[in-house]
Length: 379
Image (cartoon, rainbow, N blue to C red; front, side, top):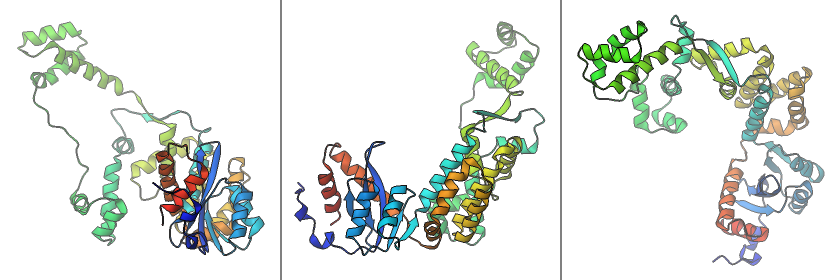
């Protein structure tokens, strides 16, 4: 049993000097009631829980902790207001994960009105072009294997590749030995109908009925079941119908393809993205902006990132104006996100642990008890 008394949290822990902190919110009741968790970047432990995420509560905590010199956070506006009103000299660092998450939300929000729910790419004919064939045979696993082989060719060690792709070293060696995509074929026993497939195609090509085909097959010596004949004929007819069916992808798939575009992707993926950009020219500006933003953030180039935002703001696009203008207002925090190593990863981990503590109490505990349990368990 955990004693629920403030005195059980050690005084040294409560009065700890914490110059580098991470701040994030958590939900008491999602969409309605939120609190704030504050973690120490040096010890990677939570140091306090606040009953609200409003700027006044956070500002009061910052006033009590004048030693704070750096805060990592997401783009939630009340946190920015609390820091600006109490300690403008504090170094603010945007969390890079939240920047990418906000960019994905913008990407999805802007593309949804311009892309139909089902997008026609091209008709599937017998004389399919090589590009169409590559699109149809696009295999994400084979793409991953090629990436592993390229990393090894560039001199990266087996252990490093295994860590980066979260696979075992024997799997890395297996991928390096492969010369072509693996065929996922299941072994199946032979059936009586297998020897008659070519004959079935001939009879179906003569436009005979199912009963006529069954009678002729029996006369020619077929000894299998009629249900096998029926299933094979249905499969042949489906294949004939599919030869003139168009290739379609969903809006969700198209949005994902545009997001994942990279020059080192397989050519089938790139050609598919090119077709989308040709068919929907209105999405080209947001596509270029999103990809440039991701590249600049990946390279941790704050100057290029700010220059990109200024150019996008000058384009005066209403769909991106709010996102860009808010980032430019907090240009310092954006620069620090590129220059410094701090992020909110450790805070997100403690938010997940806090959710587990809440569930263990069936969501019935008061804020004071929740705070004591979260802080006590880290001593």
